[in-house]
Image 1 (cartoon, rainbow, N blue to C red):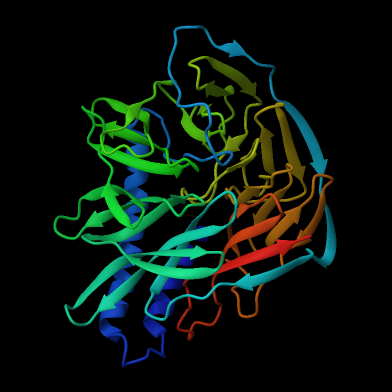
Image 2: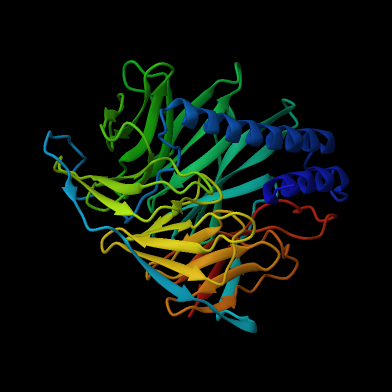
Length: 434
């Protein structure tokens, strides 16, 4: 049983045994049914996104924002040959785990509205101001359970109705509270992509000739980066410019690989080929710059970028988080600097082939070690455990999303008490670390 399968089975068991529900506010049967449906839809959506990734000729579904804004426009394509950058260099670091030492972090948990059930926190803007996710809310008057958008602006929650959709997944948010995601229609269960901006929910249309879209990043200006795909045509990265109501612009890049980044100057970043655990083949990072030029940097075989959840951001500043996949129990976290080509491998930690790594702006990492919790690792290898709030599940909490420039960790935890009303629900949490 994998880490995620175990967590899913625990979710079902705990949901069925929840004891205390305020009868005056929520229909218990509706809430339990909503929880089961929500989890099933979440798993179906995850499988569906994986299927899209297979259909799109190797282009994966995770796109990330590197820095916060784009000041030089959007990528155009030229016929110039790519610039060849030096091969990435391995920089081994042996971690020094201080026995029993906790990282110097103070945690704070944000409130969750009482009417919000099964909240999931899945996005944070690079400044750390806004956390975003979704929740289910039961409406007894119409016997419906609907998806709502949850936003925390500097810790203050807002619950926003998403009309005509359910099973929402929030993929990204910027510091202005512009949110992008996907959901299912109420009537026909088809998947739709949307952007929430200035109090309005708008569907994102695909470019001509494509029938599916997946928005996964939004910069400070409001430009949205994603992918569009169609059976028989493969897929392409696309950009919906800020303020545009029409179809997106198509960006042409490699015909295989995985889009992993979008930097501050508008450069789109690919990893070629599509990463595969345990498969060591020649690989390279490719860059499509805003002026239409391109570049590539070879990387050592075996490194794979990514994160444990497709909503999570594997890139922070110049650094892309990943692991060195291996057979058995040997898969250390490793981060690549896109600018210098340094590939830092933190030997002595084992992620067990889970992409449970969050990059710090300085090249350090926050790495999840199954059975041992999350470890904060400095550039020199000093490693300390991240302290957990009281009642948090020691195995699955915390669930970090991003580390901002001040070293604050933004994410969520899960309560460990199976009888708690909030069991198996995300509790938004920040850790302020010195």
